[in-house]
Image 1 (cartoon, one colour):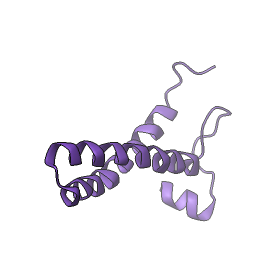
Image 2 (cartoon, rainbow, N blue to C red):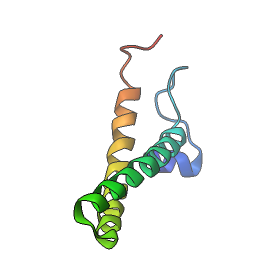
Image 3 (cartoon, rainbow, N blue to C red):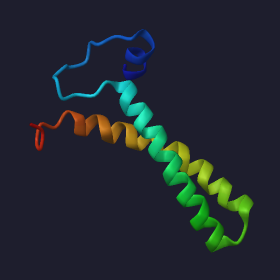
Length: 84
C-alpha cells in the first residue's frame, strides 16, 4: 500500500497540511538508521573486540530498525496530538 504510493506517486492516503508523504518518512528512516547503525557497530566492536561481529550486528540492526521506525513514524503522523 505505502510502497505502491511511492512507486506510483499516488496520494490516496489521508491528506492534511501537517502530514508527511511516505517518501519523506522513508528518507528520514534511512538517514536516522545510518547514524544509529554507526553507533551500534562502534558499541558492538567495543564490547566484542571483533570488527566482523560488530558489522554483522550492525547489518541486522540496520534493516530491522529501519522498518520499525518507518511504521512508527507513519503511525505518529496520524496522531493529531501536539500538532498545530
